[in-house]
Image (cartoon, rainbow, N blue to C red):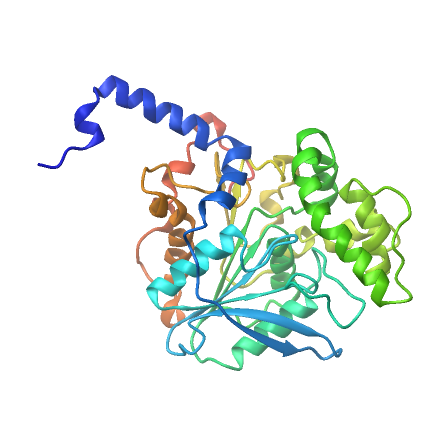
Length: 361
C-alpha cells in the first residue's frame, strides 16, 4: 500500500504547509537565487565548438544534440556574466536533450573561461555577434530556429529582432528583460541588490578587467574603487565601446525603441517580483508590436520560475516546459493549436482582477 504525505496529514495541516512553502518559494530573492543551488543534478552533455569571428576573434558554442539536424534548434543567449552552466541554461538545455531537440549556448566574449583575442567585450545592446551566430546556425539546418534571451541576453535579443525584422528565427522568447537599463542599474546599485547581486557580478568582472589590462596596452585598469555597476560601466564599458558615459550606453542599448518593429512571433515573460527589474522599467503596451505578447506574472523572480512541487526535477523543469511548449506551436512553418503554454505557468500568474497591469498585453 502506497502512503502519501497527503494521506497522513490532515487537510488543514497540509494546507498550512503548502501555504508556507508558497510563501518561501515566491520570495523574490529565494526564487532568484535558489535555482543556482538546485541544478547540480542537471548536467547537459555539452559539446564545445569554437568558431572564428570576422574580426579575428572567437565565440565558443556549447551544443546539445549537436548532430541532430531533423529537429528544431534552440539558441539560448545568456545573461550578464552568465554561461552554459547558468541554472536557466542548464535547465533548458537538459530538457532539450531529453526531448531530442538541438540546443546551443553561444558565449559572449570573455564568458567562456578564456579572455578573447581582441580587446572587446559584450553589452546589453550588442547584436553583431548575435547576428553572426544566428546566421551560422541557419547555415547548418533546414528546420526551425528558435531563440531565447535571458536578462541582458533578452534585451539584446529584442533589440536584434527590431533591428532585423526579416530574420531567420521562427519564434523568440525573452525572459526577465532589463528593458530600461538606467532604471534597472540605479535600482541594482542600492541596498540588498548591491550587497548581493552587484557584488556577485563584480567578483567575476573585475578580475577579467585586470586580465584585459595585462594583455592590451590601450586598456586601462582603474586605480579607484569600483563597487557599483554604474561605475563599472563608466570605467570599462566606455573603454570597450566608446560610449560617452554610462548614460549614453544605457540609451543606446535600450531595446524599447525597437519593440514596435518586431515581426517575429515573440513572447516576453516578466515577473512582477523580479528583484533586478522593477515594474517601472517595463515597456508600455503601446511600445509593443502586434507580434509581441507580454506575459506578466506575479511571481518568478529573476529567471527563476521554480514550480511549487515536492518533485525537484519537475520544479526545475517548469520553465523549460513552458519554453518548449511555446516553440512547438511554430513547428512546420505556422502556428498550430497545441497545448497552451500559459497552462504550464498558471501557478505564477496569480494576479487579482484589480491587480492587472496596463503593461500586460
